[in-house]
Image (tube, rainbow, N blue to C red):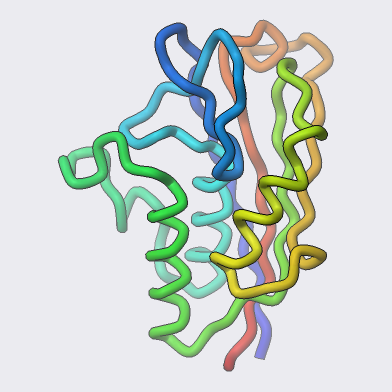
Length: 158
């Protein structure tokens, strides 16, 4: 049995915050604002996996009202999501992720992101696709006020 889930996340970009994407610290003068480390790519991935398994969304499992998750490393959130999936008999097949931001360039960081995400998911690196695009200077992403991510995940019964 297979299931597909879709995830989307967006975070405001502000001064005084670090930029974490796909579990990698990206040197940049502005970072994503959020309760945790605000890793928009991992948050979208968590939502895709949770959605595929019918387990709700990231806000249900890691609410911003819970002090335990303040400043949390999103890799820990992803590990917990994978644990929840395994508990229900699911395993990850593959994921396809897209970041949307104007700057900085992401492609030099993709190999590091894949090498972090794949072992957490329990898949080979070639089962983790990461792409990036700009918003062609339109909207909040184009004005560099925010970053967005889309994720699609395939899961299957063990």
